[in-house]
Length: 154
Image 1 (cartoon, rainbow, N blue to C red):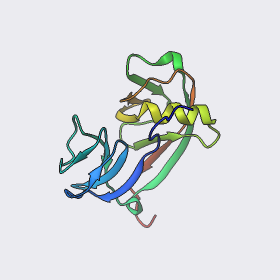
Image 2: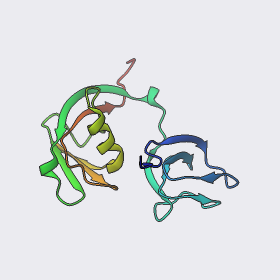
Image 3: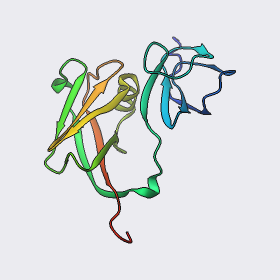
């Protein structure tokens, strides 16, 4: 049997210059979340050869879920490494995040991990994603969560 190597992200906490990190290790650094692209020691996270920026660290208590949407990333709709998902409920003023749907199969979950998909922009009616890894060759069911700041005593 062939060894697929490490296929899941591993949370490692705050980045530490004395720790040796492996591909797909996840750290926080300067109020941001980073994923290791390849092994390193004493290489501070910056977007490039060794690290990939995932997102800024936020305090979720400061946000309210506006709505949750379902969608599908169709394998045939990738344009190079970019995918634009259209939905009239998406606005430019409500922050969106995307995740794989709970009903995804093992094959779909594996394809999602290999794709290393991130949100890169959001506009009225659409959210744009990029695959930093392998472009999925199967459809991926996703959930889009739209967050907003609370109003008054929410």
